[in-house]
Length: 244
Image 1 (tube, rainbow, N blue to C red):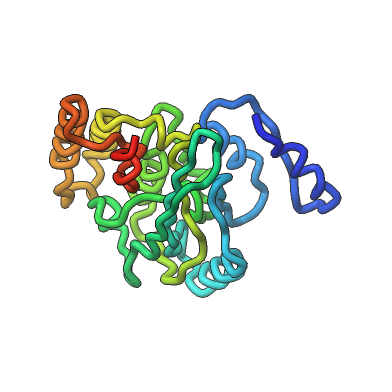
Image 2: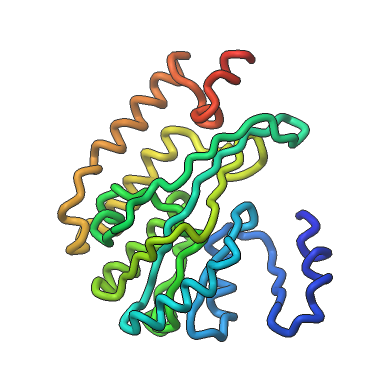
């Protein structure tokens, strides 16, 4: 619905850039389209509001070559949250840099000790396609977490953490993005969906977030309904909610 097609047209002279336009059907459908169209040996994803740093591809390729048994990998990233007004103008932001450690394990991802932001930045080989793994269009929240849990269950020894900050992950509040439409109770349902789908995975047996996370968001929803909590859109900017 924006000017993506017009912008991409400026780069169509470069044969490396191929543009496929499909009817809007959610992020999972878009990523699956890219996944089925991809021809490279290593595949990655970049959401429209995030940024790859200049050394993202070169560093990732170097790591895959250094560790040839790697099936999928995640680099470290910087996290930035932005707040926009009704005219889509940026009014405030927080730089929440480097939420990871230098030694992220797959178990930590299953344990929700490392927060998912892998719709951007996740890399994997073509073996994932051959395994039949796809982005789950039924998962409406935590679809990126679900995808990497699928990878971890199928390839528990194929994970690589890249301990360099290679991209910036952004969440924009006050726009028409998904984070603005997600209620606390939706987060609770999202955790339930993830647990029910992956509860039998060997790596899920050490988790302690279920049902703690579900109860946390059910409580927040109740407090919001009672006027005691800040709406999710203002969770990083509570001072602006108080001004309303």
